[in-house]
Length: 330
Ligand code: ASP
Image 1 (tube, protein in one colour):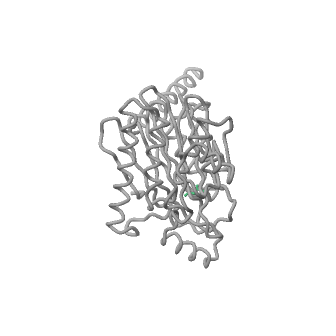
Image 2 (cartoon, helix red, strand yellow; image 1 turned 60 degrees about the vertical axis):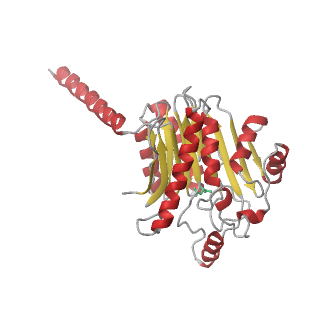
Image 3 (cartoon, helix red, strand yellow; image 1 turned 45 degrees about the horizontal axis):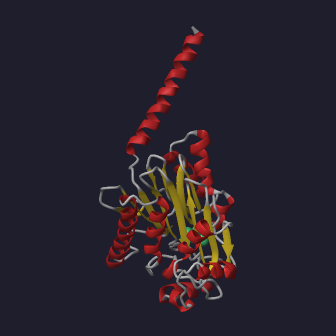
């Protein structure tokens, strides 16, 4: 009798868990590419209609460019690079052209890209004169025996690889300069209104996952500070059969809690659905005062985009659908 009860309860529990998993499975959209343009204090009404339009058009164009690579049979790595490059060329996001300033009024950019098929990765930090930092990361992945290059060494390598160099003035934007002056006046060490980093995760027709991230860091950061973006497993991670993740937020927390890899580990070892894994990690991060979000795809292309800030610029696209973009939490 007692054994029957235990058995019945056990079956009920299994049934409940299956139902939860099925509903998560059914409600999670699928895509071949997901991108972000940073998380932060992005609230309805705080962005003008024209800026909102410009932001959403730039995100859509990035999605369409990245998807074109995959539709033509290209690799997820190429799609990630293409999507990120488009966002780096825009002054609207905190990466490449729109990178924010350090306390010393310099722009120091970080980037990373990871190939889920091979586990190979490339990362760069302290980039000051290369137009597209994501290309430095990609060149490290493809043409170097190393994973992570910094500062002058990274720039020299980028030039050897034939990447485009620009005058540091190219990265000057009035809005970011004013943001720095404002942050210097603030009593807070780092002002985090809109973080604005960019990232992409793609799944190609061969089932290969890739993830990449690019950033100007945080306004008013010390020169030499490195965030989570180029730290593999913190801000960027991809593993075939598991997931690809790109993060945005207060980098110190993403490094300390190894956010991207924590999500992957929950999927891989605890067999969690990516939606649950990503939601739980981002919610737990908030409890520890870590603000930000992630985007990700699992091996079947399920999309996740959780964040614990008021908003996050984000979007995804399937092989044949329209791009879907969003900014606010509601
Ligand atoms: N995670 C980036 C950093 O800490 C900032 C951001 O996401 O906007 O450098």
